[in-house]
Amino acid sequence: TGGYKVSAVEVENEVLIYPAVQECAVIGIPHAEWGEQVCAVCVLKPERKQFELADLRAFLKPNLATYKIPAQLPRNDLMKINKKDLPRDPYESMRNV
Image (cartoon, rainbow, N blue to C red; front, side, top):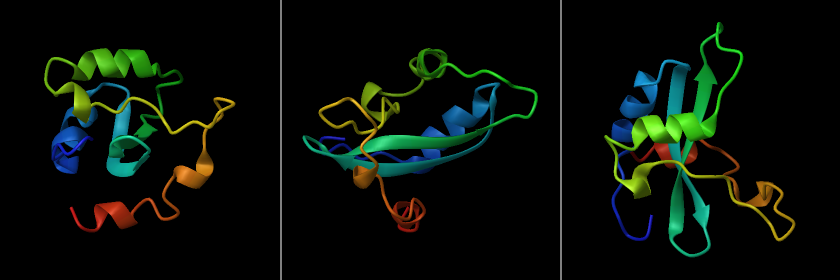
């Protein structure tokens, strides 16, 4: 987040307003340049079969600063999700929130 303070609760509350999302947890994941970046882990409502990240980002944009909006998962040089950069225990980063 480049030194900006991000409230997980603030981001979660905004994501939960999105019609497709049933549950949400926001965590910080490693970012090479900024130290950490925002990551939202969501459970969709059972009746929702499709989900577009671009739609969620557009929905969040009017109410959240850009650096608070989850952008992407960390990727390696081959553009695959870099699972080793994801937290081993996603809840660990939320325990201190």
